[in-house]
Length: 156
Length: 171
Image 1 (cartoon, each protein chain N blue to C red):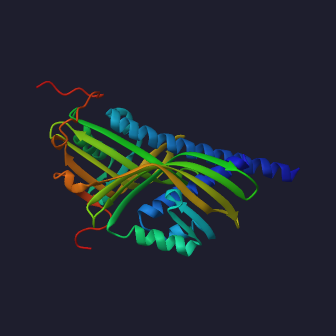
Image 2 (cartoon, rainbow over the protein chains, first blue to last red):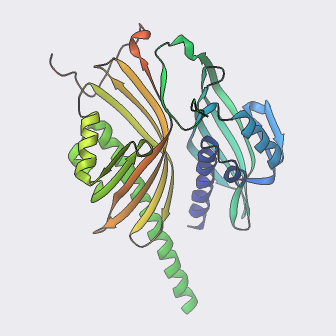
């Protein structure tokens, strides 16, 4: 019973992480990490230590010219102690880069570590390995046009 | 003894709350399935009579179940449109005995066979639910698009629909 509530809380943490990432809510996203969090995105290509360094990378990499969708599926959450847990997630992502006029599509498996601090679960370590990532020029499809977008509107 | 009783009560409350969250997730899952399977009568049952919608950041705002249903049927009623709407990342909050809110991540694809275009996108839903006679219903639903894009399927010459739930109407 208590275990199920912890697993649910960890899933919610990851859902919030993805939502804040795509909505560019950097302050709320920062709250998802411990201060000493470590990342190993893209199999270690983007390895960072400390929340501030991670947040600097994410906010810079996903500026308003980037429209992103990150969806996490298939949670495999394991409680490893009273205040520690691990998680595996399947990612599907789709990122439109308005500056370079490209679309990125990919999938990956996340391996995370979580820790409970003052009753709240936080991400202590997060990393993923890509099953694939591919990039295409949007110019290959001349008819392709954006009808709606949350970020990077022409007037911005 | 009083301690045990209060613990049992607390556990029962937690269990009831979890059951409500699962029922709300199932409601939203059904909602998406009925949209894509064009089961309009069943879809209407997902809403309260006074439900409101604010699709596409308010671009498609409607008041009342009938007005919402008319909009959805108008947009997706034709067999020339095939849709996939999938909701992920449920963040459900129970806000009272009979009220709740939910945030969902949407990914959707719509193939329009009449105009030969594909529309795809992603959005964040913000919903309000209410429990009426023991059943959770959608009282308010709205989303903001992360993106929506469209392209002409004729540009991919090999692209062929090999299966579809909905047959093209007779010419």
